[in-house]
Image (tube, rainbow, N blue to C red; front, side, top):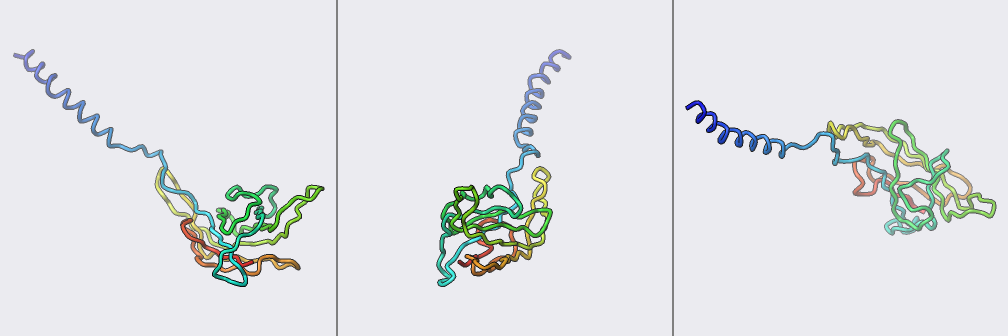
Amino acid sequence: MNTRHNSFILKTFVPAIILLVLISFSACEKDDICVEGNTPLLVIRFYSATDTLTAKQVPSLRIVGLGKNTTVNTITDRSALDSIALPLKINDSPTSYLFIENSADSEEGFENGNIDTVTFNYRTKEVCISRACGYIANYENVVGSLTADTSNWIQSISTIDSTVTNQATAHVKIFH
């Protein structure tokens, strides 16, 4: 009877236990996969300075971080755009950019376009997404300012939404 009892246990309980183990593992999701989000970019829309409700493209736009030798990689360089998205520094405020209208190289390799310096001041707020994703940065109290010079192509800057938590809508308007 002992052999018969052991056979019954093997035929009944072992497959049931294996089935329960397989079901429990199939319902698990690994913690090291992050699919939730990234630090949002600052979305800027360009508008006509004379008709402030009309979007207006900037011809041959180039954006370079102040003190950097390379263009930003979030836009197509030297293209006509009426909307862009730019990264802000996470660990340091402010972030400054050179906005170049009609960008072109001279025969000597120098920039010929009209360069305006725009600075964004803000406060960084870290937000925990999950254990796998870690933290992202959101930005609060975002304000853009223009460095005045003798040939500014940018006329004014207006903050639409001073809190940057997503990239779904524009945060800043630039009039030119």
